Each structure stands twice: as structure tokens, then as C-alpha cells.
Image (cartoon, rainbow, N blue to C red; front, side, top):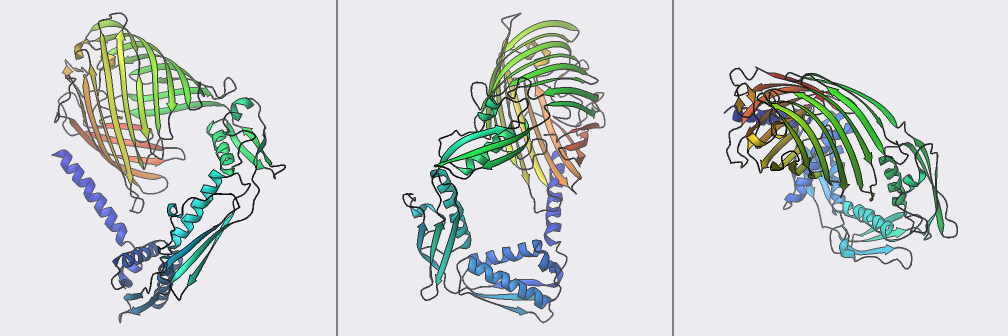
Length: 587
């Protein structure tokens, strides 16, 4: 019931915010309402209404007018241009102001729809054009301005991708015949020589290996010249995170070849890092770190650091080797020493792993690896030793627009990790997890609300919960899980301590608002629990928390301040609220 009330509040708040924005037009909303009249053409009427709404919302010149006659004349010209852009070149527009000067009616007479009779492509001899049916602008269809421009852009891309011209400069001429309501369109490319790439020069390096950067360019001497490939090469160099500035020069053609040069300025490859955070259940957390992004001269990165909080202390190091046998693949060697003092268990562990990560596409990545972990775990007063060898495998699909403050897109992550205990080989189990999150932002609404949704689930099969090492069980609760409840507390309670589970479910609904460039707020509901049974059953009871948060937006990420309240507090277990302070959104 608490959840339903919270979700209803979210929905009402969004609706009110959107409605307020929709009517918040300082002059037009109450002084000059409009009506569009056009016979038998609802599609055109809708286009005109949408364009008038957009212009009234965005056009600063139009917003300055207060005289109804000037407004009507200005909007009449807007409608006239829109008619021509849709192929109505003989259309007419009249306006009639109402007697109280608080309304205007636009009377549209579109006239005949002008259609494309012929499309001609004037390109260099020998260049083969694809069938005209593949272009946005087609013969026999309306002469729509956006289709004319889209065809020009598509034609330019096609020529650049399928020819070696030094320059691709396109123009078009559209001629209208009012006698038969037809049009002819000619696309013309200026003459340009066909050339190949020549010598490639890279200069300005002090510590980065030139051969490594050349491998990132993506083209070689003798290949077909393409300016887009030079732009992509520049982007590839910046993506190495080793270069601060690039000056690119494309020489004039000489003997059928074009030399290119890249003048580079390296970044400072060393960075010191420090961080601080706070949550009610973990207390103050401090972190220190150092990294070198070019330790061996070819983009190899080494990171060392430590984190200290009320419940854990960690020292770790990581070496990343880019281009590991493939340009889209890296090898990551990691090691850490961690001590935890939690309500659920105490542990001291040493871990090392080797992971091979591959970026299959811009949005799809995967990894496979091997991990060795030795731990001493004290659970319910009994200390056990474990020597776990595991082989983690993950897949991730990520279309979001920002790592620390996503506003659009989604993330899907799946992981499988089989374990075997080398100190007791009969102990074998497999951990499987899946998570999904999506982000929807209404940019045109007041405060630009973002609806963020997240769900996660997981199971451990092969052993009962009692036989799974306590530091490998699933735990739910805390700042990155279910806010409002103590860290890792949402599972079976044994004595006074959480026991963990063989499966878990989590779900979060968060609405984010941005009041200004620097400040924002969130409303959230989280739910979750870790269960003894590895076989999840629909309708398993979750614990729910809700709360509010404040966001301060810096140039790199938001700083979050969240207050979570348990909706089903447990006696002598849960506090009245939990406070969380950290960098980045909750998910």
C-alpha cells in the first residue's frame, strides 16, 4: 500500500509539472489563442499547429511582439513557409482577428501538391550511382524540403564512402513548374581529383610510442582517401586518453596522393585521486589513489589505491594492457587485500584476477577471466578458510548518454561465475546475476524530469545457503541497493545479524528533477530482499524503502545527498532513516 501511494504521488507530480509547463506561455496562453482551418487535410493542420506551438515556445522575436496584428502577420509568414516546405507552392494563407483581439483564425488554402518529376545527379564520370528508390527524395512524390536536404546529405555520405575524391562539395537546384505543378531537382558535385593517402606524419610525442598511436589511425599510405577517416583517426587518438591537443593537416594532392599530418600534445599521464563519502550504516569513507596512463609507453595503465570506512579497509592495484592481441580488446590484471567488519560476517581476503575484456560494438562489451581468492571468514562465531577459484563471464549492453548521470538509454548486464573451493573440492557453486536499468527524460517538460528504473536478480546454485561462504552470499540493503535500510541487512536474521541468501530481487523507481544548472532533486522508491531459496518464486515478499534526495551538479558528475526511510521497519533492526552522500547517481 505504501508503494502504491508513493508511485501515485510520482505520477501526480509529473502530470502537474508537465501541465504547468504546457500552459506557461506568458503572453500567448491568455491573450492570443489561435485556430487553424484547412479543409480535408488533418495531417497538414496538425503540422501547422505543431509548428506554431514550437515557434511560440522557442522564437525569441515572436515572443517580443505584443500587438495582435504583428503577431498574426509574423505567424502567417511562418505558415506560408511551412506550406512551401511541404510541397504546397501555390498555397495561400489568410488571418482573421477576433473582435476582442484575443484570438486569431488562420485560413489555409493549400492548393495542389507539387510533385517531383525528375531527379538528376551530376557527378564525375565513372562514378556509379545507386537506384533512385533508395533516396529520401523520389520521383512521383511530393517536393518536401526536408527530403531534398536529407537526400543531399545521404548522397554526400555515399560518395565519401564509395569514392576517393579529394573533396566532396555538393549543391542542388530545384525548379518548380507552376503550369503542371511539378518540379525537377538537380544535385551537382564540383569536380575533384580521385586520390589515395600518402605519407602520414605524427609529431610532438615525448613519452608515448609512435607505433602505438599509428595503430590507432585506422588507415595507411596507398589506401583510398577519405576525409571522414582522418576525422575518425583524430577521434581515435583522443580516445586513448593520452593526448590533450591535436592539430590535423591535410595537404594538397600531389601525384595522386595526399599527405596527412598529426601534431600532438601529450596529456599529463599521472593523476592523484582522493574521495570522501558518507552513509549512516558505513560511516565516513575515504579513498586515495594514483594512476599512470602510459606506464610502458603504449597506453598501459596502472592504478593503485586504498579505501577506508567504518566497516572495511582495502588496498588494491590494477594494470590494464590495451590492444591485447586485438584493437578492441584489453587485459586487466587486478589484486587486492580487504578486511571487512560487517554485521553479517567478518573477513580478511586476498584476491587476484586476470580479465580479458572486449568491446564488440559501441554499446556491447563482454569479459571473461579467472580469479583466485583466499579468505578467512568469521560467521556466527565460527572462522573458516576458503580458497576459491572462479571464472567470471559478463555481457553488457549500454546505450546511456552519461556514465555518472544518465538521462537517456538503457543498460542490460548479465553475469555467470562458477566457483570451486580448492581447500574443499566438494564445495562448488555457480553465481548468476542479471540487471537492467532504463532512463527516460522529458526535455521539454518543466524541470526536465528523468524517470529512472532499475531491476536486478540473481541466484547461487549448487550449494545450500549455509554451505556458501558468507562473503559470497547475496546481500541487499544500503545506498546502492534498497535505501532506508542498513547496509546488507535485508535477508534472514540469525541472532542479531543478517545471514545473506542464495537469491535476491531488487527494484528501484526514481524520478529526477533539475531546477537549474547546479541543483536538482529526486524522489525514489526501492525494494528488495535476499532469500534462502535459490529458486526464485514470483511474488516473494520484498522490503520497501522510500525517500528524497538533493543533487548538486558539478562539471563532471552530480553529488548526491539522499535520505531513505524504511516503509516496513523491523524492531531493533532498522533506524528511522538512512543518509547517503556520494558522487554520481544511485544507479
